[in-house]
Amino acid sequence: MKHATAASWLIIINPNAGYRAGEKDWPKIESLLLSHSFEFEAVFTERPSHAIEIARKAVESGYRRIIAVGGDGTLNEVVNGIFQQNIVPADEVTLGMITVGTGNDWGRMYDFPGKYEKAIRILSKGRTFLQDVGKVKYRYDSEDKSRYFINMAGMGYDALVARKTNILKARGKGGPLSYLYNLLAGLFQYESIHLNIVVDDQQIIDEKVFSMSIGICRYNGGGMMQLPTAIPDDGLFDITVIRKTSRLRIVRNIRKLYDGSFVQLPEVSTYTGSKISITSTPRHSIFLETDGESLGHSPLDFELIPKAIRLIVRKRALKQFGGYQDDSPDGVED
Image (tube, rainbow, N blue to C red):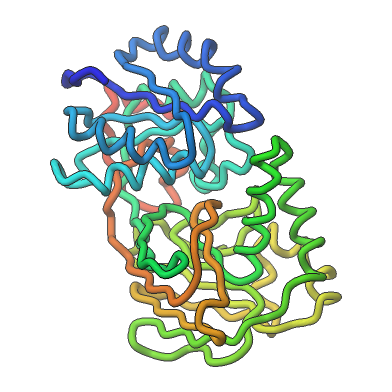
């Protein structure tokens, strides 16, 4: 990796994202970046978690501007790499995204375009937004581990569906429809788990829970609005808990996941908070995913880091959230 200049971007490409769209579409993306006068070095990931290592080394080598080319998992890895380095505060690194994945739920939050030309035009304007970041401590086998995330964490049934979907992705069969398929198929092998949930030092749940989401943005699973009122820079996690319910009731209400109206069901409760602790009975029985990546299991501890990552987003999406920093040379709407 070259040492960066002030104008340099590092482009981190996941070649496997979006049914290998990262690899197939890179020549077109590269051409568009050059046509918009980007000065960059491009690096392809070679294995899971490789983008974490690349991003960390990039910041240590002087890069302060990074673009992830991939899906939500690629973006998650790059964020973790930025937070793992100790050279500069994470918010001094500007992070952009070109979505080529199958879910693209972070991009959906900001109405970020899937068309490469439009996405690169937005990146070239350089409008940045300081978004909150989540950090979760969890167990993997007998080890204590931690992970940062910028979209959503899922537990219980959500984590099971993510794990099954990730297995299909590894076989080249992933995507939003596979998530929906696993959402239905997994019902016949999953049982609700007893959880004790504490938010900001107050116990909110001590009973059997079917599924739970904690996050900063609103969507996961390829467009399901699990946290319909989330605001990405308010300094709070949004929390949705679905208590134990029947399989038939779940099937009848799946469509309500896509518009967020499922939160009005009596077995669903919503909360906000900045610190969350979750224990399960049995102790290690609830599993975790963050930004679609399957991780470990309980006990779980979540911490919200306010306005901790600088992201390039489109101007019109920010009107619903509030302030942004406009570093672009003009005030043209995108």
